[in-house]
Length: 230
Image 1 (cartoon, rainbow, N blue to C red):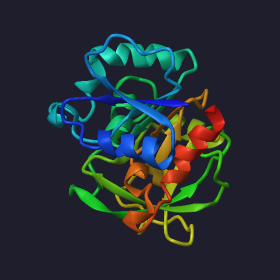
Image 2: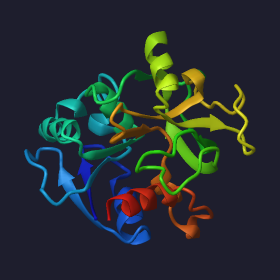
Image 3: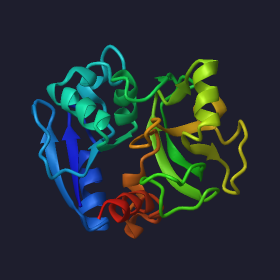
């Protein structure tokens, strides 16, 4: 299979995503520039990487959402194409309307860069297919606006339709305020759209996809995608 990694001005995790998908997951991967106006027909999954697209001016992901390539990403996703947005990529997906809700400033109002634990809530999608519901992953976060927020109706739909992919937890899988690093509603760390072909998540699996880094829990996400789409 082949990953397409979109590069915006200010992206700083695009090469991490490339290395994780090509070197660690042993799949084809190519970069796509934000001004491109087409998506190659052989792309199986698009990655919107983390970083500070357009310097995060105005609002995280708000300017990136209007890059020429995003019209193609929206069309690609609406036709059933697979898209994963990581950190700033998640923010861009919400700005583009491909995922509901928004990402607010962290509850502490501080930028947080640390390891956290994620609980797999939904494994019935290509992004977590090699994981089991209830599995706990150790993954890094690095964001100032990762506080997921949506209205009560949207939160209820996410919960009732099993569209929450990950929640923040402690190392034993327990959900509590202490293990929720940014104040996200219902400890939400990652969500799916209704078709389950679009995933947005704030933690960075690409940064823990190589055992040389001391943990490769994130590799399971890239391997899940690859195994599902091979």
